[in-house]
Image (cartoon, rainbow, N blue to C red; front, top):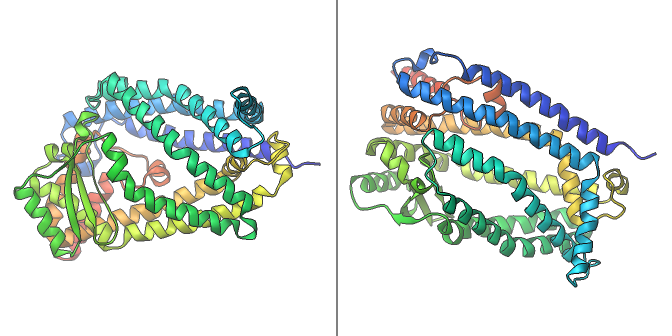
Amino acid sequence: MALPYLEAVVGFMILMYFFETYLDFRQHRALKLPNLPKPLEGTISQDKFEKSRAYSIDKSNFHFVHELVSIAMDCTVLVYRVLPWFWKKSGDFAVLVGLNADNEIIHSLAFLGGVMIWSQITDLPFSLYSTFVIEARHGFNKQTLWLFFRDMFKSICLSLIIGPPIISAIIVIVQKGGPYLAIYLWGFTFVLSIVMMTLYPILIAPLFNKFTPLPEGDLRQKIEALASSLKFPLKKLFVIDGSTRSSHSNAFMYGFFNNKRIVLYDTLIQQCNEDEVVAVIAHELGHWKLNHTMNSFITIQIITLLQFGGYTLVRNSSDLFRSFGFDSQPVIIGFIIFQHTVIPLQHLLSFCLNLVSRAFEFQADDFARKLGYHTTLKAALVKLQEENLSAMNTDPWYSAYHYSHPPLVERLAALGDAEKKET
């Protein structure tokens, strides 16, 4: 008798939905608190707190609806065997347009193309509401409908250009990989990740945003002096026009070896003074100096290799495929089934990675503090919290499970405690 794999997967999906909804309710209750956390009293203005509270509650309400619809759709797709039905129909479509559906690559691309169309259609109402209702209501959205749909069109085109060669390569590797399949798959994705990290900021990101060199001036000189003092191989310093889409702010670094670049959102420069921007960059450089980026990359590679090892087990289980309604064992379907069967491990792994990420954030904050940016970093964190209308009150269970960055209260407390220990 076949084991009830499908029933177990659906059961755990529903269990996790109820658990995460419970955490969402806890967070929603925290968001509705009428007062600032005591450590932020006198630091955050009451006006900003009220705006942040309204924004966070709106997003929370939207999240409840989105998650309910998502779990209902996911369970329906699995319980009513929509995947095997859609796999068959995609093969029929390939034949209809004169292609050979017996070729697994062609069949898989037809299937994934249909999935992409379905995903775009079902997600579109939520994306539109989030962008043009919630974000617009609270002053963040700067996009027009034309820009929104133009970005969507570009993303679809990129998927159609980049996706088929990658999918085809993965299918061939699985078909010919033999006993070393996991290693071959990992090697392919490792090379692919390096290529994409190299090409994305150069060829893909400029399709959506304009990158311009940071003009000469005090800010540029201060950042270059900081980078030089840490022996950070800064080659280029850009400003990105994030304000064309949103007033949210950010900064990031990219590049390999001695070819590093720093990118500042124009909104960050608008919201913070020069010393505060430099303090934010000092925090980011702390991640580099403390090897956080490299450690995270290595961790991800190890996890990826282990996942491919698990996939090889799923790949050889005909009972598992039959449980999901498939008589054959297509490569792409194997990956989809594997993702569903390891949901428990994925949630546990995500929780552990968030723990590590939060520890890294505290370390990067302390790194910037030791460089002399204690006061300006605290000011920058507060200002970014205010300008982005981030949640001021957070439930400890919710933040521990979901947040990759510590709440503002915890970051300010850690900076203050570290400063007291040294005085």
